[in-house]
Length: 106
Image (cartoon, rainbow, N blue to C red):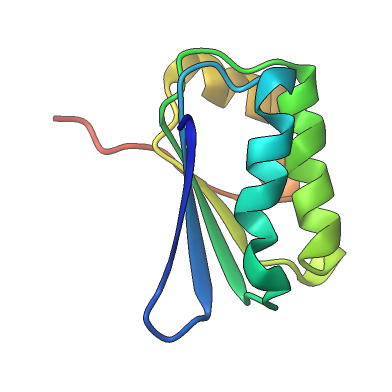
């Protein structure tokens, strides 16, 4: 499976890991990942460390998650993305909508 969701022990956080291209082909799996048992999670982490490519449909999916998670009150962090995806997120002004956490240099 290219999209994997894991919840924290306290049920407050869901971490969604995406592996491979993040595009429309991941739409159903991504939606299912953040609607696990329709629980009201308070925080989300989207791990993009294994994503070599994302397109505009992926940006749309992230916006759909943000709306479901509370819009301006949503607590969503995008983590582990490469430089190319970081540029896409910055050009799209996603740094104003999500917390962005770049991977640390080795």
